[in-house]
Amino acid sequence: MSVLSLNPTEIGAQGTVLILGGARSGKSGLAEAMLTALPSPWIYLATGRAFDAEMQERIEHHKASRTEQGWQTVEEPLDIAWVLKTYAHLPVLVDCLTLWVTNMLLDDQNIEEATHYLLEVLPERLAPTILVGNEVGLGIVPENALARRFRDEAGRLHQRIAAQAGQVVFVAAGLPLVLKGKAL
Image (cartoon, rainbow, N blue to C red; front, side):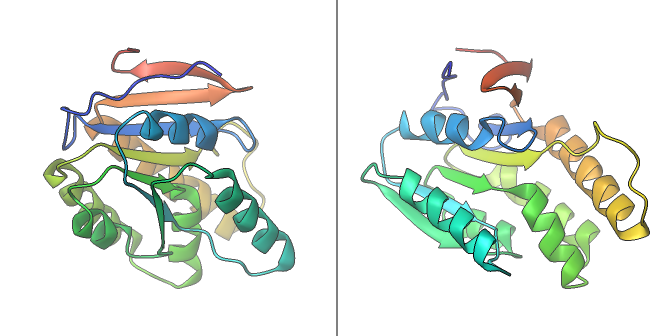
């Protein structure tokens, strides 16, 4: 996989990278490679919840893939803005935004308010931030209201973050395509 670079002097909104792609596209691997090119420590903000054994296996696989010394995992399914603010001075990888949207929907949280807070925190960060999300708008229109709401909420969230981020990358088949910003 081609590795894009982060500029450690770019902070706040300019130091924010949004990485989008489909399931198993290579998004997380790219995000981890970009972050570990910076000096450690790095924060891995995990939003996933293990509702079943298969999801627990996925979470364990992700944890095992971070073998490099310097990772600190913070598991927070809802208040990601608080974690980004708390660790404002350290590089953070948020994986992933679409699981965060799922958690917000399942817990009947105010997604608009949480998104607003997230967008307020990103420009205040003093270290680079990478946000990973699944691009869910490329398929068919879902047949049920909850799935359509999920797709719509994720799409709106990604658009709002992309407008503010310094760099946006789409990943397909392990190949990154820079949509916004520059490839270093």
